[in-house]
Image (cartoon, rainbow, N blue to C red; front, side, top):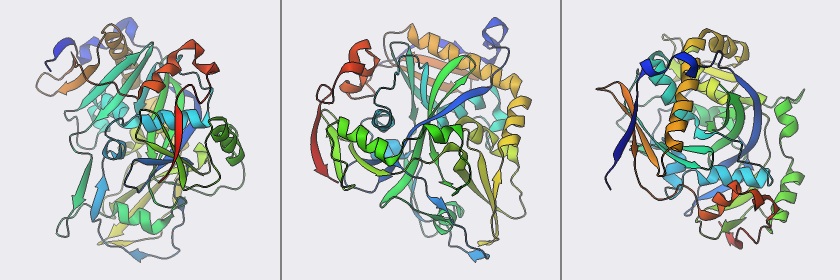
Length: 395
């Protein structure tokens, strides 16, 4: 199918009254989460759980990474609709969630790419070409990550670091068969209501104290009630459900983990210290408060520590206001352009022009039909039968 350019956006366009006076993340709220489960069919567990931080008390030698590595697991495991797991998990945890006031739904990766357009220094390799697919339903723009390669196989003679082996050695999986934990949060940014999905490496078992996010997290009993209200059977975590028109299997398993316990893990050779500015953008977009900087010499890792970097990320946000204000203006500009188009749109960064090119790109809908009903005013009174919860399957 041919595409027609509908707009081009350059950095010089991001100025004047379109740029908000401030651009900070506020009103952060945990909405839901899920784990991908190793299975012959696309299967998620809701709410799932990140892996528990459980580092050894002594230095350790690790093998280099090898085998299958996911780059974009949602697309790799569920190419029919990479964004469907986000919405399925969201409506299991919050059956009455009103999607209509949300301006943007996106993966963290898309927002990081747009930020690299207004500030190339936030990307380790500088600004590279990228593509984002966009669809609008009512007043909500859905940004879908578009990667040419969704996974890779690291061969025995290749070296891609120690990151995945370190995670295996220093965390304990809480969900049987898990291959990755994804979280869904909402917040306000630059006058926009946003929902962001992102992967989380792990969490710390902070028994003392809870955050406001924790108080909003669903307990297992709450989730059981939610599943029962959808005519599901949550009594056996090996049982899952599918929805008519979808191939995704949804199980109930795990327990919601508060946002203030989550962490990001980075590994680095010891003679190249990792500075906070190198990871700040990633942590900021997902509001991840904790960081592990693990250093090694030829695969021998010293005992790592978990740092609370909340204050450092907040300082980064303050220092980056000039760029973050442009980011807010850019996202709003993109949303406005796509809203004026009756078709799906592809956004592409053209390195030669140093511009974002938006083109009409007819393609199949991003979500199964029943999920679009969530934008209708009467959808909040419908029962599970109305949206086609149909059967129970073994995963």
